[in-house]
Length: 123
Image (cartoon, rainbow, N blue to C red; front, side, top):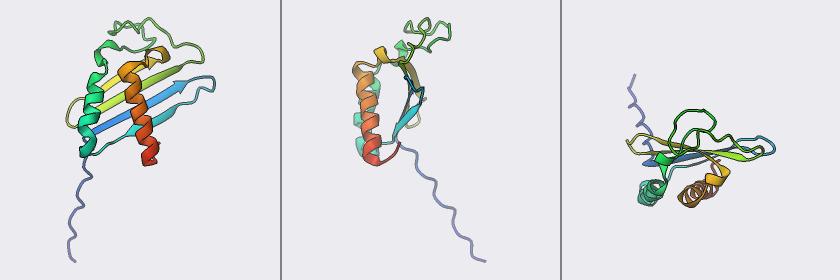
């Protein structure tokens, strides 16, 4: 019986960004994801690097997370945003933000992920 070669593993994307928005009046979680190719990776890496990852904490946990968000509870009917960016072999970066914190580079990153997700037909 002939031996068929093992299929090549699917290459891991150079950049992957996942966004989840939860809360709101209905309490529904929506998710978007972007896995741009190598040709777009430098643009995405630049956008990811502009976000202040070290200034965010974890909401409502009461810990000493940086960024001063540990003492803030989510606003009733407001959204909480969870963002995770993975770049090649680097450790993943994660942030948890309230609606009013989704400004500047954070908003640009989230909008880029949502646009990419819509264009690619992935949600």
